[in-house]
Image 1 (cartoon, rainbow, N blue to C red):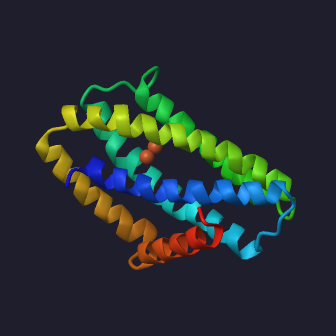
Image 2: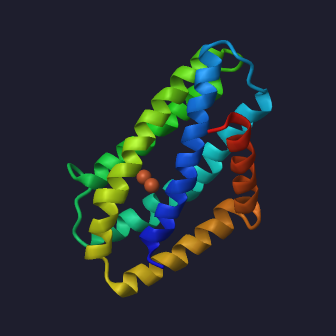
Image 3: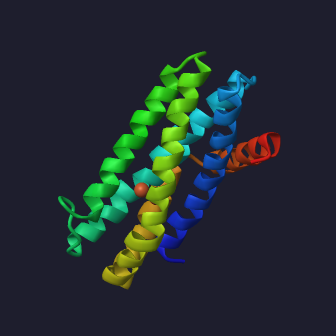
Length: 176
Ligand SMILES: [Fe+2]
Ligand SMILES: [Fe+2]
């Protein structure tokens, strides 16, 4: 498996979360009740899985390797990806700060869904094919090792399964 295949399969899980977040935002906008616990579970997934694990792999392993292989950061695709990760963190902070204000949560949630949807498309269709082309087999192998280390040290064993179980539960609940 190439390192970009690992990231692509994580994108699939992120897309499931975006579908749930979309439904939740819709419900909050129409003043429907959403259990606080669900909002907290989504925030936990956004911080732990999406940001620490997934963006962590991209920012500390994949992007530096691509830069070393000549892909531009400033004024190039990596700079754009980094700026979008930062914008995503801003939306997550807004969701967390919304407290019991459902419409504020929904507004930030909608912004996050729109941002991440196009971000993932750009990575899958442009950035990752570029990585597959410019990174040597040896570098790709090294990246896979680095990804494993990130999963173990940043996320922790067993936590991945927990995230997936939670996603599955929320997906059913909101019929996302
Ligand atoms: Fe990214
Ligand atoms: Fe990504």
